Figure (cartoon, rainbow, N blue to C red):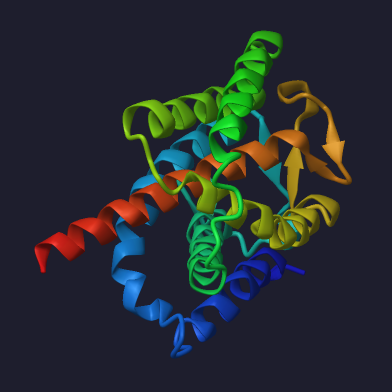
Length: 227
């Protein structure tokens, strides 16, 4: 079905948009702080996405997209970098409201250090595979910036949100890779899959969401100071 990828994007963002107007979380009031981060992060990831399609890291099944492309990318793929981060920032904000205890506070830094070390090892082992190299290289850089330069205080909250977001992640990415809508070239990744999902997707998503949430918090703090 030509509208499959478009429908997945719509369903990904539908409930976060509708539930944004819930009086308790009132997420709609924070929308203006999300979109600058979506734009910045989206441009970064779409640049790599464009290069990945050119060099055959992945491709898109024409049977499940409407066929409207911008710079060689299906419009659905461009929307993916809006709908998915938006939904995950919504999850992050809901957890901030409903979960008052900082459950992972003691573990956030060790988690970051392990991920940095793991990413460095993966870059060393898979430097000749484009998707693996970019995914783990980016993750290492983002975590180093967050932990040692920005010294972000939201990492424990982020990790909790990421863990919860794995539920929709497995649904959305599972559909994209099992139908399949997105076709991966295993010569450019580790060729290790969780079900039908390449292992790298978990860390690619982690980087994308962390950048979005860091920017969301930055613009929210900047907006509060401006008041």
